[in-house]
Each structure stands twice: as structure tokens, then as C-alpha cells.
Length: 241
Image (cartoon, rainbow, N blue to C red):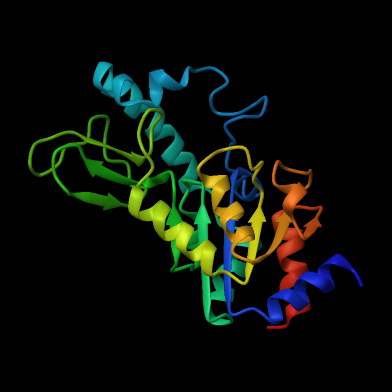
């Protein structure tokens, strides 16, 4: 039995599926990664551009960098792997995506149940009130809220806590999952990686989808060695639409 057929059988027998996605998922759509040799931190120190202290020190510089990233993201479209996960919401009793990515591509592909552990680049929020704006429109060099306070990118910065409600929801979905798919992540960033570990401990079948083994490969039931687009498309065909 091939690995694709084995995972397809797992999925056909599943009611509750959770997918944990990382940078590799987005990279296939053309989103720059953070940690490789040409990543987005190559010419910058993270604390200068992605921390509360950096924003307080020079908000115009921080916003200039994020405006460039948002403009680049506006030119990128979800790939077929994103669309497969979105379609699966209609197939399973419960299908959810827990993601480390901030690009919003799961939403744009049509997924409704997406839990962003690190926030969203296509969201802007007020530093003083609850106002939030979703979209990639250029808001100018120094966006301000109607209340007069400065707006900031809606991502989780270095030194900030992950959103507790989102993390807890992801953990609960993992505990209840029949199948957990870990797609395009190295598995070294915590607490995101613990979502997969919780699923495994709860009895879920655990599948790693990655071109190279990640840190969680040793606890996977099946490892599919390939990219997200290739492997999710093959699984979608094997499961049957």
C-alpha cells in the first residue's frame, strides 16, 4: 500500500481533521520565508522591525517595511493546496486549520475555520481601542484610527504572547482530532509545534507533509515527502471528491 493510499484511508475514516501549516505551505505560493538564506530577516534585525519596542522607537520605519510586505502579499494568490484544505470543510464533520503563517492565504482560498497563532499581515489594529481593519489596501505611511491613536500591523511581534484564545482553540481541536496533518513546518517553533504533539497524545493519526523531515517526523505515523501542492492534490484525488 502506498503512503498516499494509506493516508487517504485514514482521512476517509475520519470525522475530525486538523491541519497545522507552516512557512513551507506559504513558500509554495511565493511568500518569502523568514529563516532561509534569502528570508525576510536577511538584512534586518527582528527587534528593529517586529517588536513593540521597535515600533515605539520608529513607527514610520516599521510601517514602511510592513507596507512593502503587504503590497507583495497582495500580488500573491493561494495555491491548490490551500484550496484543497478549504474544500475539505464540506467533506468532514470538523475540518480546521491551525497556522503559523500570517499571510491570510487560507482565508482567501475559502477556509472558514482558520486559527492564526501569529496573527495576520492583512489585518491592522488600533493600539488603543478594539478597532481592526482587514484587507491589504495601502493605509498610508502612518495609519491612524478614528479614535486618533496609531494603528499597527495585526501580527504577533517578538516579545509578545500568542493570542491565548486562538492557541487554546487550536489545542482543543488537536485533542479531538482523528487525523492531524502537519504541512510545511519544521516543527521547531513552540508552542505551535505542541498542537501536533497534543493531537498525537490524543490518539490522532499523525501525518507529516514536508519535502524534508522536520522535528516532528519521529512521531508521525506516515511521512509524505513532497510539497504541499503535490501531496494535498494527490490526497484529494485519492480520497475522492
